[in-house]
Image (cartoon, rainbow over all chains, first blue to last red; front, side):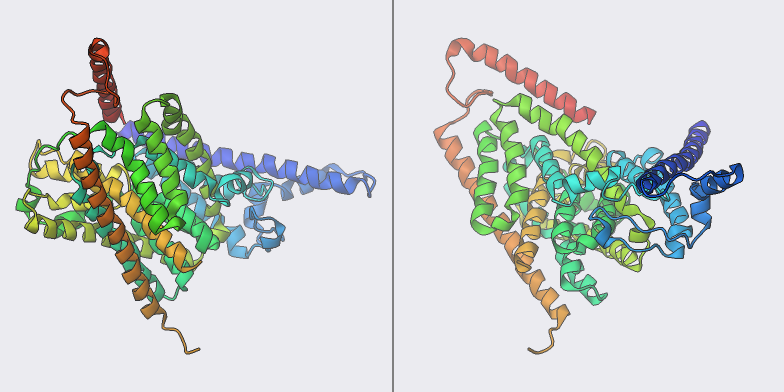
Length: 445
Length: 81
């Protein structure tokens, strides 16, 4: 354990050093390209060695961090129109704080194993975005290019949804359809925290975008934030993904507080076998239903249904295999780095981010609680026993929430496997939060 | 226009949103049940076939082997992830 810690801290130090040297290099090349443009007008004048050294010093990252009034501008993927001169705090201490936050995220991802697939790329994107002078988050920087390519136009979240659809097995939901209602109850987190966000003084659109974090669905959050509150995208995406990653930490205390020991020990029967045709028709049924009721949500549900249909059709395994492996991996890399670009100090270190983090946490907790309470009620009225714990899986962090449920359940009664039972509400939660997203979009049409 | 009470608006959103989500899921649950009934009535599953279309008896064995392999791979993947 000790060796591991040392290794991790060594890694951090290495990253820190390389980030500084990278900053210097990038700054240099930036400086060069700038002077190239002006060379055409001004002939090169002879410079003394001390002048050269002095101008080089001005391009180092160290100088940029300590010199607060160097007229550096913020970078925004949308281009120069959205850029403004950086404040003293943003270009100095703010960067250092953000880099420290990034290191904390590295620690959580590597040592604690919190959703490393997302947290690590996001954190590294944040590190790159906070490099002084390099403008990596600008329209010509790597992060800005990625951002414009797929996040600003909502493309990546839909690709992720496609992959998730191709990975999801709806068998557990089809076997026990009424557990789908638990996935609906958990959406109470979204609408409950919407009220909370409005009370805190956010306007209705921003409040809607923030509260969707309660669905614990990263792609949906990004999709909605883009439509309703693009300025808050960074903080919302980071909050959504970090809470998804923190599912194993946030959910169990709430689950334990709301259930008795006896309830947690409830065993659920074996699920019936699901016909192959049922699985094949299911994505079409869901899509038809959303076409009829809520076309606003069809980009999300359509991509999801396509992925699932490709999987269940069993005739295009090559394609479905690509969707659930290579494609989703590639998109995850881009999505992580792109979202990370919004971790730049000038965008993230604002008071709103704190509000978003707090409301997101409340939204997420309320969603979990609502799911558990609903499951308790269902258990009272149902013929077959329902373990209230599976209600917590109604938030749509697939399959993390279901795994957490299974873990908590087996702590009370070893060998009590709730995983498949929890997958029902879990996948229903994905559909539920996509529907909730569609409702919010339809309000602000 | 009178001043809008945003908190009241937010509550209205909540009623609408939860209503639609539950409506959607309740209809979905009924459809799933109906579909299960219909499918099991018209295409009863006697053996764990992997294919939807009626298969000839000669390839049935092969089909079953394939189904078993697919199931095993799926289980393996599930455990791995």
